[in-house]
Image (tube, rainbow, N blue to C red; front, side, top):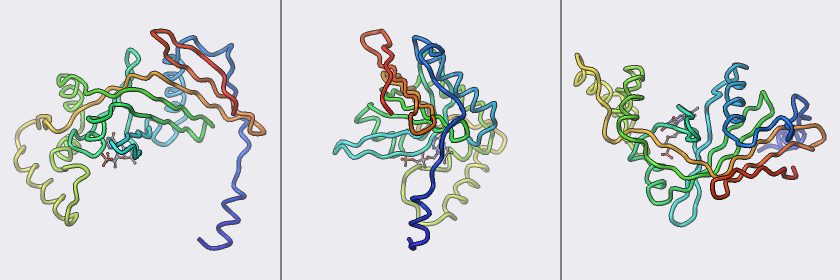
Length: 217
Ligand SMILES: Cc1cc2nc3c(=O)[nH]c(=O)nc-3n(C[C@H](O)[C@H](O)[C@H](O)COP(=O)(O)O)c2cc1C
């Protein structure tokens, strides 16, 4: 990185003034607030409002992160879909403890979630797979996610092969593709405020009660 760029990086800063998060407006349980923040991000037409960073950990304790899209939030379970033979799936198989993170820059908001991941029932994955555009369905069939491939051409050829295979049929869900649910035990809402005096409200599930605490920014 050149010297000019370095000094520019250290000069990038924002003072956050858009909103506040107080105990008075926060419910006793976190899901209503999470839903309303997600809806606000969608309504504001932010780019990828449902994108969340999913962090998994391997058996040596090494974390790894990537974006996935939230596809459902029902009865306190967050849902996303992926390849069951991917690197992330292998990590969740061995260690179901995961973290999720939403960041909505346009709203000066972050939500941190920690919980346990589990595979969704196959009927639910079937249902969601059916709702996907045909190209995405064929894309799922064509990709052995996370594996090394020699070239992009291989991927394209596999896609064409799948197009021919499913030519006059509705593609079924591949057994190696499906959904995960996440049951959180920690959800923290962060609202940027002026002078770095940000609002942080953390909800922790203790037994079956959510305890809400304010954290110092
Ligand atoms: C905005 C965005 C959304 C994404 N959504 C998904 C998703 O819903 N499911 C998925 O498997 N990968 C998704 N990806 C790709 C993942 O970030 C990642 O590259 C892929 O899942 C392989 O991860 P892994 O090798 O760690 O398993 C998305 C990437 C971006 C940038």
